Image (tube, rainbow, N blue to C red):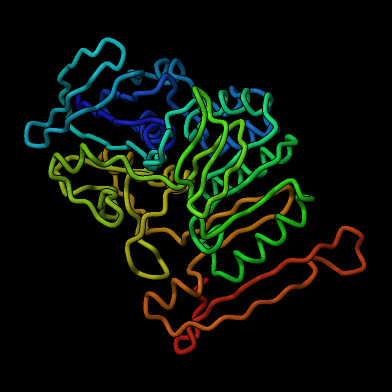
Length: 391
C-alpha cells in the first residue's frame, strides 16, 4: 500500500485528501497541519468579523473526524520542519510537546500555503495588533472590535478593504494607511482612484484613507494606543489590522533543493509536480501560469488552490490531469459596492510587452428606468495588433 503524505490544511491539502478518498487508489493518506483545524474558508473571515456570519463554525468545511471516518489519518498541531527527497522522508515537529518524528512517504504533497507579512514596525508586538489568517484570528479581532471605537488598518489591498468594510459597518472610525500611491494597487491607477472616491463617499466621514504614507511605530504600554506614520500623523487606535500582504511558506521546500519560481513560490508543472521526484505541491505556496501573459505569476487564491489540489490528487493516484493556469480573476466588495478584475490590467499588459490600449465606460447595470438601476464602470484592455482581449 502506497503512503501519501500531505503537508498543510485549509484548502489545497484537504482537497487532495478528499479527492484521493474518492479514487480507487490503494493508499494510506496522512495529513499533517500545525493548526487545530484542517479545512476551513479563510476567505470568509472578514465576513465573520463583520457579523454577517454569526458562528465561526460555518467557516469550517470539513472536520478532522469526517476525514478519519473515511479512512484518512489527520495529525493536528504537527509541523513539517524538514523534507528529505532522496530518502523519501520528512521530519514532523509536535508543536505542543516539541517531539520530532520521522515519517516516510511514497508520494508527498506540499500544501503549506502562505502567511501574512509582519513588517518590522517598532512595537508591533503590542496587544490588539492583528493579522488576518486563521479562525482564531477572526474570533480575537471580532471580540476586540466590539469593544472599540477607533481602528487603523495598515495596507490597502483586498484584505485591507474587506476589513475596512467589517469595521466601518460595526460603527468604528477607521483610518487606512497605504504606502503606495493608490489603494488596491492591483488595479490600474484611475480605477483605484475611482474605488477610493466611492468608498469615501459611502462612508459618510467615518473612514479616512491615506496613501503615500507608511506606519513607522506603534505607541502604548501593553496595548496599542496610537499609530505613528512616516509623514508625522499620530492616530488614536483601539485596535490595528496589519494587512500588507502575504508570502509563501516555502522555506522547507527551498532547503530540500526543490526549485522555486517567482516570488519564492514553488515551481510546478501542469500536473502539480515539483522538481523533486514523487513530490507535488498545490495552493498558495506555488506559482501559477498566467493564461493571458503566458508568464509565471504568484496569485494566491482559494479557488485556484482547490482546483490545483484536485489535479494533484488525480496524478498522485496514478491518473492524468492537467491544470492549465489562471486568469488572475478576483473580486471583493465594500458595503454593496463591488470591485473585480480578470486577465491583465493595462499597466501589466504594457509591462509584458503587449501593444495595449483600453476603453473605460460607465453605464447603468440595467434599464435606466428601473428603480434599482446602478452605475457599472468597465475598463476593457485589448492588444491593438492582435485584436485580442487582455483584461
